[in-house]
Length: 203
Image (cartoon, rainbow, N blue to C red; front, side, top):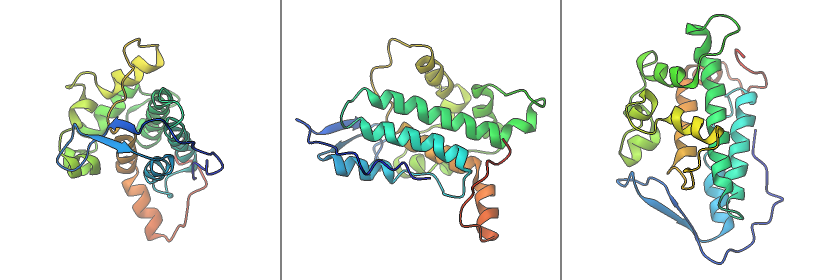
């Protein structure tokens, strides 16, 4: 599912959009976008695999839309970050929730993130943005680095007054984590010749 906002005109800004975002060899680097179309193209290039269930694609596409709209109003990137983490939680509940939850009960986000590492073998080397740019993300999932990914989500959802700055590369990290969680599902779909998935997985 594409986050189709091609109809939206991204009018010129008075200054470039500069955001913290990892780049090769610079996990704490910045990226600069001179035009709205260059920003739109970058964000839309971070789409998740089309074989991932559409219910997750729709949530992630919403995050992409909000990121693109941040060209017009910087604060919207914070809404985009929260939307991205909501998509990640949905994906993790789909892929891992039934493995260690009682029927009908959703595991909390922190537990699901930890399970990616301790139960499903996630390492920094398996996260494309980390493998390409350096740094580490596993500690964010385990809660060893502060704020953890779960704490970031909770802070945003509960009105954290100190969340003004964007988290560098969050959308791309979420894209990679969703891809990892669905890697077997994607491989099975590709082996079966499935062009896209219109259902909603195990949810």
